[in-house]
Length: 143
Image 1 (cartoon, rainbow, N blue to C red):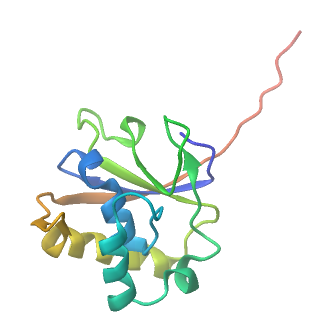
Image 2: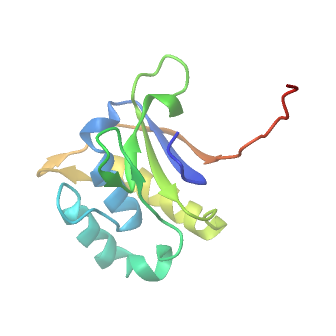
């Protein structure tokens, strides 16, 4: 897992690489400003408000496999056994509040029902949500 303390995971029934950036923008209003997600970020602003006011200190980036910093990533290690790469992880510097978690869940469910990618309807279902916390355990080894 990337070196971030918290990852909010959205489990779906479809390959997440097809919509990971779009769902992040729709759910949090954050996107990298260069790739996919701008339309969904605008929908977030219109429907919810300023993403910086809500997520400002919480959401963060982490390096992806290609070393490009991203706020979101589809990754096999978050998968329930045998599900392929169907999960999206959104990175957080601090544990998101219960209010933010509820907002993200509601937005993800709405994205699955009403969202659009490149002017086409989204074709995936939400299976569940998880919050992962990175911990480090140090054991002394006898030498």
